[in-house]
Length: 153
Figure (spheres, rainbow, N blue to C red):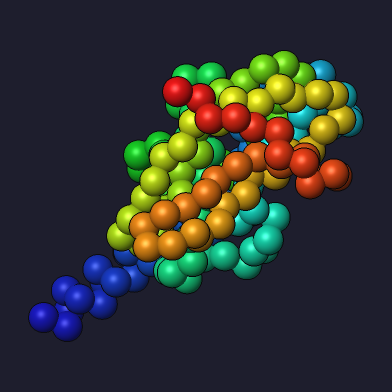
């Protein structure tokens, strides 16, 4: 049994990734250059916890879809990345609908939010535990702290 168990554990550890999922962008990579011309969306788990890992039992806020285009929750991506969804997006200024996933080890919640991105604006996706099985998730301007999102139905 030990002869099988040790190689299995080593192989499993090798498959678990150690890099962060790269930021999503709808901009041509050649023209990105300066981010001050674009809208940057980050989640509070990306900005607040630099040393997060898979089994820390802390909630993660992930970006799943932008304008109904799936950018996260990608199967088999965790073989290389720590997580299967980006926590950062660099977008052209404009109106967007973003789907966020609040994830705990055994529970998750999806929320769709609509916002208008402006050039040079940094938007933070925030979450707050309100009560038993109740959460609030919103987008706010990082500079002013003003809520910039509405629920998309």
